[in-house]
Length: 189
Image (cartoon, rainbow, N blue to C red; front, side, top):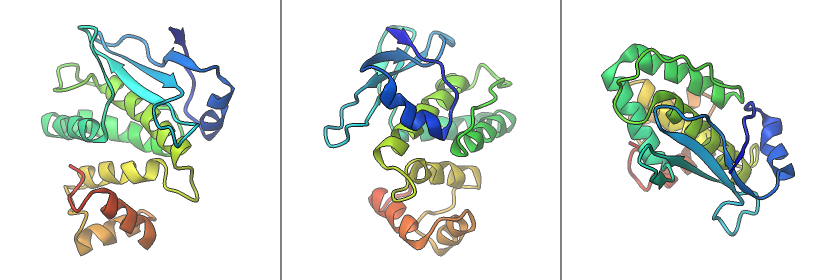
């Protein structure tokens, strides 16, 4: 397996096209976990797709779903607010197309190691930007709304309060409709 350690940026989203098809480690081993990508991914209708996976200490591999990553972040929020604040700071950096700072305060938090969670989201969001390119489509903004809602107190996505909250962060009526529609009528928790 090849190694690909690159900084997060808008250029990276397009630069991935220059890399040969194959499997790439995108993190070092952290507490026995590693993140890797496979190019091309599995979406046949999206030629720019990449697949993101996590290798666990026991050698098993799993594609991280939005629900798994969101649930993991929620558990960390409940476990330790300083840790959650550090992670959220890095998610804001990722959302803005920058690299995370890392250096998390707790290693005994539930779920994935914090760095693995953040780097999984980095690559999932790059995948989202490649498959649903902004500004025409939402890319990472669709999933980012979930973390905003978690962080700011579990605001109901389908309430007027949830709508006002997302508008405060620059989401349009159409984007809010798409977020609600994608959730299948449920909050993204």
